[in-house]
Image (tube, rainbow, N blue to C red; front, side, top):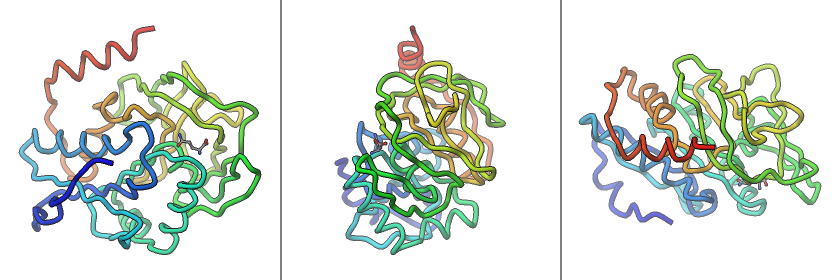
Length: 245
Ligand code: GLN
């Protein structure tokens, strides 16, 4: 787990607070890195930003400016679901327009319900109009797609590893059309979900390190301002390598 000790002490009135939700149980494949990418891209623009880890020992505050949640195995996912149901701070913030980024298992937790690989149905927190059931086979590998969301123009890339397939209801729109990999599965060639200020994807990576445009899309929503582009050759190199067939 990434050590953010002391970050709470540095939070002031003007700090952009990035809530890293349940990194102790949700955060496979370095998904906690999404919070670091948001912090770094904010700081490079002169915005004071801190990551606030919210663990199973903490109630979930409604005061963060943006929230990120990572993927997890079935049991950890269930602990997270219970905690978010008991402490609905993130749901309250999302209802007021705070952006939320949910990766893989977190999509499932944020839906109406998900069925585990053992066939048990678990109620989610209904931030997304979707349900999740196990697919016949596990989807593992690189995933790539074309964004379907206004303001995103660059191909999206990530790594997926999940058994669950998520079917979107009418209130949820997909994030991208999949050109490589599976994504949401459930018979549909799309990945991810966008509903109000809440965005989900099956892309690990971490997704925001691989997709800086997506990071800035969330940041600009969290700060309420448009952000100047950043010229970061190392990030571009990573993207070129990941998108190479
Ligand atoms: N346990 C979930 C599934 O297999 C999510 C896995 C993950 O987050 N990588 O569908």
